[in-house]
Image 1: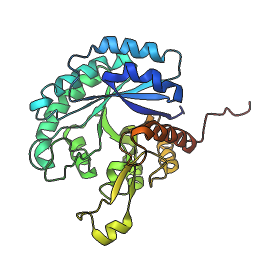
Image 2 (image 1 turned 180 degrees about the horizontal axis):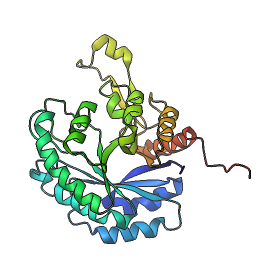
Image 3 (image 1 turned 45 degrees about the vertical axis):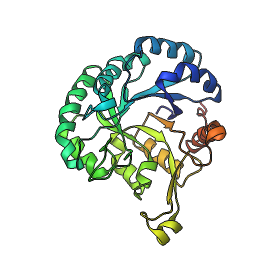
Image 4 (image 1 turned 120 degrees about the vertical axis):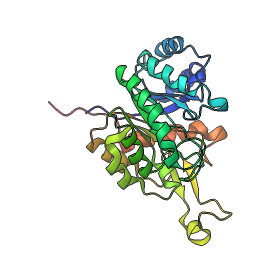
Length: 293
């Protein structure tokens, strides 16, 4: 079994500037992300520059991500569909076989988004299959509910059932993290056991739930009851997560999604991320040690 790599997310448009600064911290993978569009980005040239920067290190590009509303294509999302297509076509240039992002969403309930989802991602899944590429959907609600939202329907396990029935393709799955389920007060551990075979990539982001606030004020009161956290500072047992992943034969990466922690932020951002990196490496058992011959 291959070692599960521990990495972090990096903005694709800024990667050439940022990577030389953070490679020395010993991240093992990078997920390159774009917001709504890749227009104006020479992906062929970017892949070449990234390969030059990582050539002397044991680092992989775990995924390419495009985050926008591909189903409506409205406003600033006009290029999001074309961006999915570009990233699928260029994934191999980066040495990855995974493109991830939001599903997008039509106005109204999740149910009302399924026909358009099936149309768009049925075609994208076929395009990806021809290139040997998989597609994964992040499980962030982006402030949406079952009844309404502007970005993503892949934030609830009932929606996953509906999505995978609408597009029954083996190369579509989830870019999963425990945080987004905990925000909805869902226990991520049994969910991971059930869905692990559909998880293609894991975001390293945790949450802290203030159960005392939930019990006193509920979840619609004036007080915050949950915070996104960098791994190592939240409530999740990542040793359990890595155990479940390994038992299922997962050989992908866990890529830290930073810039959310309420404490380890601003000047403490990379302090928190490097702590999370080292914490997750310990949770997987440390570095690989070969058995005696």
